[in-house]
Length: 460
Ligand SMILES: Nc1ncnc2c1ncn2[C@@H]1O[C@H](COP(=O)(O)OP(=O)(O)OP(=O)(O)O)[C@@H](O)[C@H]1O
Ligand SMILES: O=P(O)(O)OC[C@H]1O[C@](O)(CO)[C@@H](O)[C@@H]1O
Ligand SMILES: [Mg+2]
Image 1 (cartoon, helix red, strand yellow):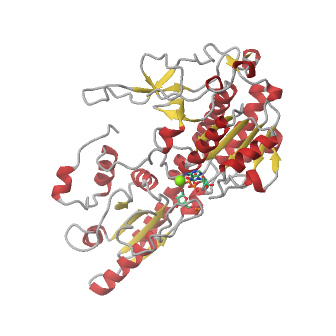
Image 2 (image 1 turned 30 degrees about the vertical axis):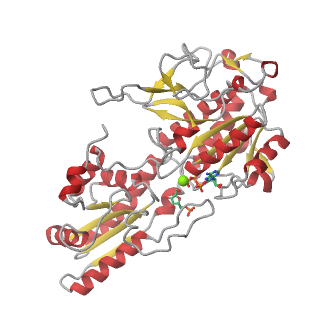
Image 3 (image 1 turned 120 degrees about the vertical axis):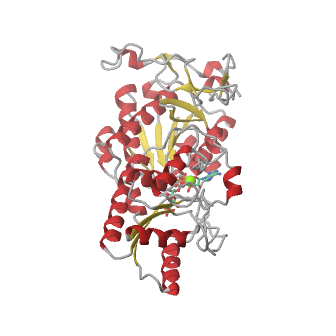
């Protein structure tokens, strides 16, 4: 499907919009990219990306591979740009939950615009979407953002809810902003798409760029989200603590709750990395407590075999078992769940008390906000830098209405629709989940018919 592009590719490109698609030519002027004269970049052969370079969405070939491969535009600097440096008034906003690396992205947008393109007018919108119309902006300079990548959180503040598309675009128009960088998760990206549509409707020369952020790794298409590696690393500390406590006590059970409202990626990867986890529970894999093949039976088995047990539970796991108010939502409309980790810990305690055969010693650790609040690690810092720079290159080149992110290791420009149409979930028929099951030895919690029905769908 070619979405809004030039349509001259001999293959299927999920293309992104460009100013030339909706603005009259007399309102647009092309300029040579200032990077041609930049002492660092001009000496690098092949620094510029050919306008027609693309990235394949699927790179695995074979009989089962998709017949018609789809592509995205390769991210990176173009020879020509559609903004003069002094013409650019950029803003940055951060929305949704925290994630390691947000400050690095902010820093690199500010420094990248300044050092690569000579853009000096960058402001921060404070407190998420609602900050567009309820707060003043703050000026962002390389000096003011220096060192912020060593801090967790977001220096701009964030929030949920409060997305009023018209009011936001009014504010953008009123402030004369013509490049908008919006850092946020799946909800945020839906908001970015709405802002882009309104800007296009009003015929404004404003580039709207989404930068995907989610600690849950629930954004599809991209390889993984920034901060995810840092989160997995930080989660190890909680799992290690749970393991030490469990091992040091007779019939010790360590339960660690990790984030993941709808997707269990943090729990899955933290489990695989640790190798001390005996059971990993995620939203995508329903489980049951009582009876043959159930969780209680498995806990008893672990305690008998090794004298202790470590469990990791994603916050969204087991909600089919928990009686909770299904109508509870946060300000953005996301479903709010009861604390699955506390619930499970209580169920286990009650079970063994009632049964009276084993005296357990259970320790419950909830490190969720500690994991989210740390600064990004070295590799995430580099990832954040590439995201920020590629976002800038796209905006300067006149592209708009796109998200940037790595696809099979190459950064690409991705249309919003592909990012927002579904949530990325752990595929429990995938080899990665099989690795988890094999490393923990936990039950599948599936009956034989369900096992038969499962088909391998992925190549991970
Ligand atoms: N469908 C939508 N249309 C417009 N705006 C939306 C939509 N969904 C969410 N938003 C706005 O996006 C912002 C962030 O959304 P949300 O709180 O769901 O976090 P998120 O971006 O998904 O990040 P995360 O899930 O990683 O915390 C909020 O200000 C919310 O109002
Ligand atoms: O308490 P807050 O700030 O709403 O954030 C919690 C949520 O943020 C996330 O980390 C990302 O959406 C979820 O896993 C979690 O439910
Ligand atoms: Mg979300």
